[in-house]
Length: 199
Image (cartoon, rainbow, N blue to C red; front, side, top):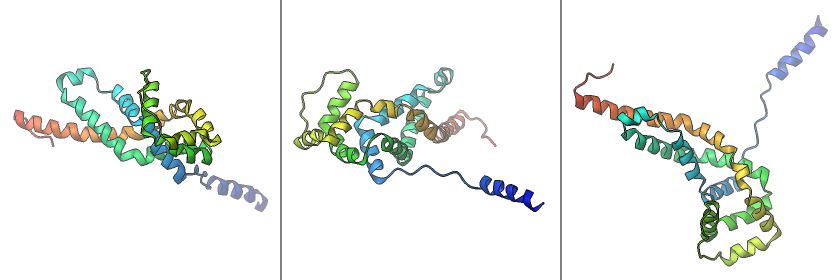
């Protein structure tokens, strides 16, 4: 009987062992995530993506003010969840770039003129007549800078799959915030109409 209990005890011990958590994003990865998301205007992409799955038109027909409330709820929740989003993106960047690439990359993506060039190219527009700084030019000339720039060309392949995770992170808070705003508006509307209050 004793020999039969030993394997069972081992199985129970293993079953109670929590799964190892994924390594947290490092400060360098988090810093780059914040800079990178600003550089590629990721926030606007998330905002537009969530606004695309907006409320039914039948409701907006009778409550047109809800559209603005929904957009405001998205903006507020994005602000609230940015540290989480930075960590999600930071982990992904850590799998794509080396620390050396991230360090030189911080200098590169901090150039506001380079950002203008990138955004114009991404949107299919004409590049603006601006010049990148000498510091950026020097960073891009290094081996780490060159490999960073090469990987940056396909960064959407890294970030696109994260949109689902980011949307799932935002959705509960967006719905809660929208619900609070819409309910407050409805309470006032009912009171103005002379309807009985809810229980």
